[in-house]
Length: 153
Image (cartoon, rainbow, N blue to C red; front, top):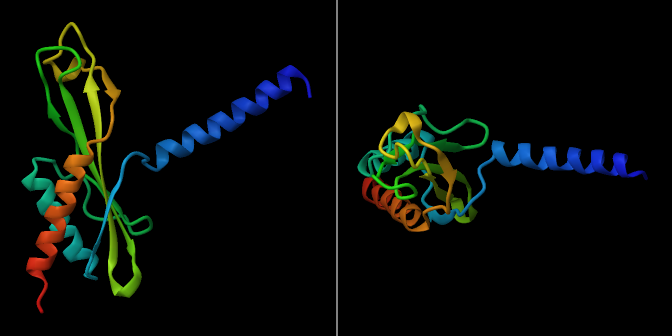
């Protein structure tokens, strides 16, 4: 194999890997089990958790195919580069053993690296940062608590 064909093969592999990473969010997911409820009830409790934590709602519910929902970006700007950030919540669910649901929550985080205008959201220079595992745990607990309170026994 020549160097140019090897380089082309590596480029194709990198392109495939990179594009698949963009379609399905990676990152740090926090997991927990919840009782089986309808999609509507689960979405309502998830939406309430988003609102309680100040995340805007952008989608009408869970995707019918991938059972994933996400919030809009919650932005907190700061007067110094690297201190302002924005976060977005991802929630996924799937069937779990014993008739329950497995719930996964991720809080994606980006930091504003703009030095000239760090308080201007139109000039923000967002750079990926580590996911907020603590906030994901908190949101997961919010959803779980709401489900356990609102399910008739």
